[in-house]
Length: 202
Image (tube, rainbow, N blue to C red):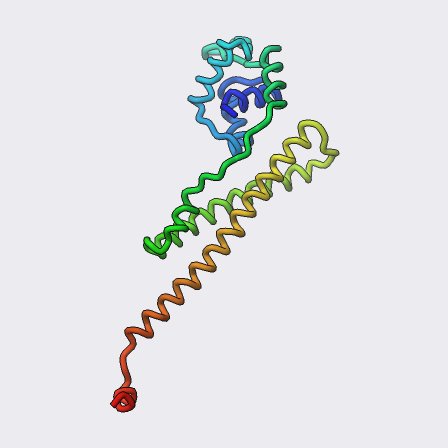
């Protein structure tokens, strides 16, 4: 997938300016395929040059005309072909997991702090996605077409973030227990010998 496809999806849902597409990325699409406003504008120009989008110049008072983009027929055809094309199976590339494999070679407290940071970020994402789901449920009505498809993507995000939170909680619990075990060993090794123990040793 490329940013071009994400923008085609956005325009298939509603026409918009580059700014409006950027806002849609910030509110929804960007949670699954992020892009900066600069990247969006640059890609829109390429899509227009390739004949996949069209725009209408709309006059504004005391401001330059704004370009409202829509899909061309070629863009709709390209989007249809892309949806039908097999998607590659995602390959996990997770630096935190590799660091966890190397935990014995680093500072355990530093690693646990980093894991806790990741856990908190995923927990915040989970709360956000769940709030989206609650708002969607409160709006009522049947889910079909675009609304169903957006709901299914949101459910995937919720399950993914919940899985990360549960796994990172498990990791933190296990590393906390490991740290306590090491501290107990160190304490037993370096604890002060009592006088009665000296007598027994003699």
